[in-house]
Image 1 (cartoon, one colour):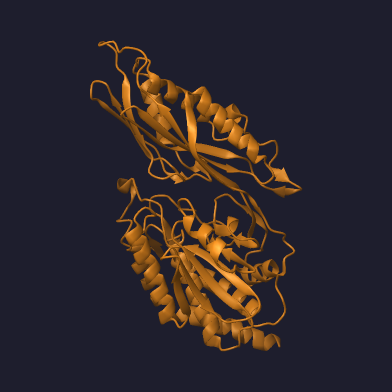
Image 2 (cartoon, one colour):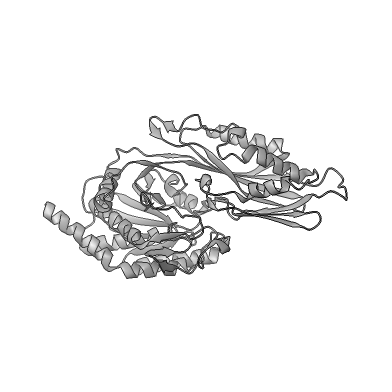
Length: 453
């Protein structure tokens, strides 16, 4: 029995190694499609590319909800193992911080560079070729393996929300949109869009400078890397920071606060826009929310590490009398969501504005005792050589959309997380190792009749 199992694993690994060049080529072609979430034609083009690839590999494919979601399947049975992925990506600005064109994949030093290489296009390719390896080894499948491909993961989840309401859901699964090992806990997410009217209430004095416009940020879940203010004399003041995913704002440098620091030294006259900027500086500069009463009491919940709340302003647009501010928060499992809403409402009200839109997704907790998680852990340990330790996912993922789904991959211990950053990349060896891990998990779960719920 052991010998046969080892032979199966060897077959899966050898098949994936044999497809190395095909995987690199497929990922490069997918990266070349500029599928930023707001560019719906390109997002649809990327989805069509993945569906055509899946069909070419021999799987059943379909596009549903008018192209909002794609589905790729193999096998059949009473249980379904789901893989939740997405083809949309965040914007690549600022372009001058990239070493290459972010939408022309560059293979350099064993890595593939390009927007989406880690998040989440690389793992779509790894998952498809893992499925193909299991199909090629020939054992009958007693469960369905189903890849669900979204198109709006990086913005409001209109795609997955609609899918959850309209279609049968997998019994369990993963989204390869985080880190290794298995992330059975995931922080909650919130976006708060506020509006402030900024018509001057005080007549401007000709000898004073005033800030009249602000332009900062490109995406609600990215620490802004550039910000600009336009002054009343037409002068432009610019600041450059460092972009990062808002789940880890400490990895970035928020350009909005650098801009505010520059403006502080210019002796600006008081107006509504400047008062809002000062409120942002006072209440939102710390990423831990102390000034809003949103700092976490503990980094643990029932003995498991859940980290702490982090927040950051991501978009600020002020022009023609209207200022719009978006603040993103990632909150720890067990924290009172009502306190978060109250904290942002109090901030907006005190600064003379109001919340016009809010989106919140609760934190995730899946028991480590689930049989499918034990199978995932075994595959991870045997293929990667790393010990599995259940962990916290800092970012938001489709794990929040469907019960019994965890974040799993693609970043191995010691590797750099470049998601949402300039020069996003994935190691080719890491890409193939992920495919081998997934293939072993699919084989163990799919080719046996016992339940893994």
